[in-house]
Length: 346
Image (cartoon, rainbow, N blue to C red; front, side):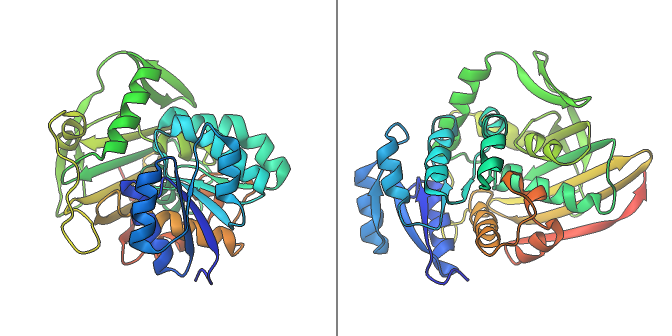
């Protein structure tokens, strides 16, 4: 448990940030609320009784003040293209671990490219994409690998019952579209490709009771960044159920609505992570509720392991490299139910 350690949460008043604050409190940590919107911070501080510190990504001094005296920082403030570098810089100055819940592919790539050497030389811990997208899929693929040291391909398929995007998701998506332009990204043959053709639509054989569903193939998410950073797999592909892929970009799709006292929506998810070597495949399956809410136990479990020394790497590392994947996934119960299926022939 947290034993009263203080943890800065940048973007604490956002949709995901609020879940993270609640999870930190549940596990015995003391969140320090941080962000640029003074009114939202004040309201959350009044609601929770927690310390609030106004800070902006474009004001290094304010970030340093927000992180002062804390044991670590969790960055929940998107668009992450604007916040990751400044908050990591502040964490390095404060000599504290940094974790984020970013699912912006280019921002994730920048984290590994720009901070790998500096963080390693400083002996710092930086864990990007420690969220539903990026972290969970990476852990599942790593656990599925087992004793394999390499594989031909990894496939991570998402079956979402619905996808009602938050305001933060819409802002991040807009930044990504502006930055990427007309092309989409794919990871094949051990390198990134810029594609202008439409992604394929196919059928994915999800485990029962979900069963076969129409999916958008090459629906590239943060897992495609995290997995190849530490697993020897030249082809990594993610898939999204077609209906959810349409919903998340539709302008009239509503934001998530709370369906229980914790604030979770009624959205359910299934992740089918498959690694293949020759004609043999291994898979790990995860089930749970609300992709935004489940990010909180994911990132707080990671935080707890970092602060208690249960890590396997120094510098910038994804979840599957930083932690014991099987042990981590087991610790997510009851938030996430995970099943490792027997090795099978294709």
